[in-house]
Image (cartoon, rainbow, N blue to C red; front, side, top):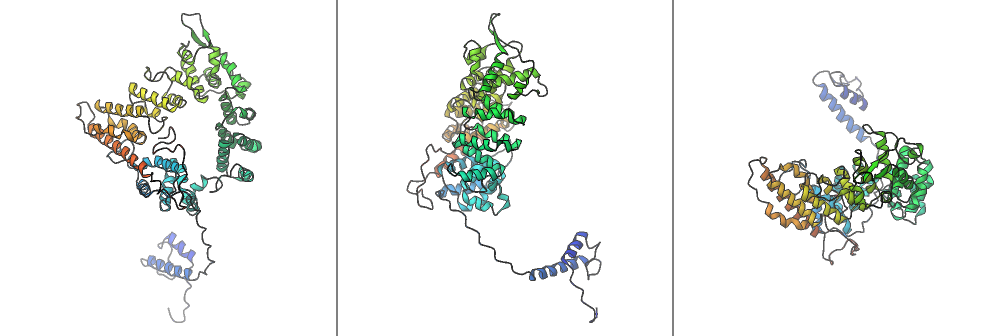
Length: 566
């Protein structure tokens, strides 16, 4: 190039990008020779253009400083508990639950109940732990509610700055603001009229909890303009505080355009034994069941309905049976399920629930009839009928004539008082072992009552001594790590040695059982230490404000959280 030749203009950035995408074999960069030097020439040109583009930028206006996060008035977490939180959040789950080996406790599985315990005590999360806490809640939806409660307002401040944590904003009504209080009528109205669907559901549920009538009136005001799928979710919120005053609104919902809405309204009305729908169902179901006294033993006879008329459909009876079910038995089951259970004591000669359940049923209708009574007992929260249908825990068939499945038994147990529930499951395990007990244990309050905990440990010990395949009990063992009372740790000391393996035992079973019991004992002792770490001498329990945290009546120790949520 001579002195008079013009200098080629620098290639445009878009041209460089196109050349990089196509490749220098197909397009040679401007001013470069084709061949093996072309890629280097392209990178040089891109570097020079990058510098030129940055140098040519004009400074923009200064961004406003971020508003500081809201203060968290709660007391600071004790130092030992803060260290424990760091360890819990740093732990990562290992292998699957069915094959976890070793004696170290699974810290991630202890995090949910630790969060519940710390929230019950009203402590604030250490600011430096918030990123890890939000990451953990992002990966595990079961942690979110407790984690966000513990994280407090600072977590919402962080969530606005990181798209990965936006779930925290979606989970909080009003985009991170507190729910309006009972006296803030204008804020309630604005959020109800203009809020996102999730915000409106949360608002309605919150109002329903403290004032059922106000929630129903709020919903009734916009009911006719709501979408069908939204009406269904809103209607479901009326389960909280359901009472006789809801009946007129639910009766109107029986005429809704949506079949699912009609079915939900009918279900709610049938849970009110004094409702008009329950009375209509009682008449229909009563005509289908009678006592036959012609034989040596009184026997229940069933005459299922021959049609599903329009009135039955309006009251929530689904006319179309699912595949594999006969129409008449399908209609019959729905009628019995929706009828008040008190109907049968009047209809069947004043017999008690135990006497009614014990009656033989003709023509193979027993399973259908008892299954419908099971659903009715759960829906109406009738403990007397649940006891009758469950039967004695030691009875053959593991649960009495009305319990058609483990799922039904678990639901029936959920209607019983906590102590009675634990006692029944303990008796079940003593009689039948652990092979079918996992689902039943899930409805027991945590930590397990002493008789229940000891029945589980005894059954595990029996399974070990019998040479049972150890990995089939890993689920129950993992549940015991989270749900046994830590005071039971001392009872495990005698089970820690590796037993002599029987000839018919699974290879390596003794070593697995010893590891599992060692891990169980270490986990229980760790839970006891974690509970102690949350307790401070009264003079030291102070937050940033220097005030003592308010006392919380009924504050549970670590592990005592909602029933059925190990």
